Length: 117
Length: 88
Image (cartoon, rainbow over all chains, first blue to last red; front, side):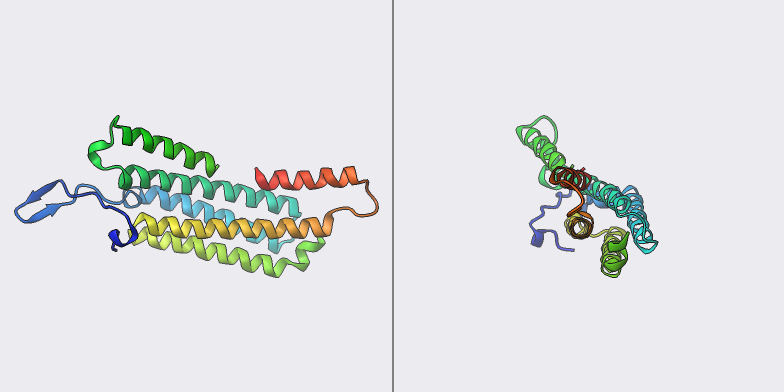
């Protein structure tokens, strides 16, 4: 995994023992892995329901409704992962509190949320 | 609904594709891949569900939009309902 090649600045390790660095932060998608896995599985369940509804030839309005729900859930999840990305990769640990960068990041997060609603 | 049975195969295969895309999200999450990877795959799944929805709407408009038996006002109301459902 090479984050730098994707333009992502990984958090610098803060502590070292001899020549070895201790990485104190990890990707937010790793930290919140279990929670994210549950959400993605739930969305997959929603898509399974769409497939079943199509197979059993249900009313297309109810299929559309299932799709709209699924789309909403996917958008919410994406907004959250993007929020984590801004908080953990764009902001460096030292400017996470009350700095102009932190405020700008919060504004960006609001925009992403509004856009992906 | 008739159009569902006719275009069913295509819609089902698109749905299966979205399921595959979500499974790839699960895979990269499990492998602790970077969040850029996760986001890219989520965006793909989102695109998949959007185009699935657009297609169903298109079928719905083509097949269920009233033609001769309803006034244009009622037809417009029907279309507005469809768009509202889609954009909720």
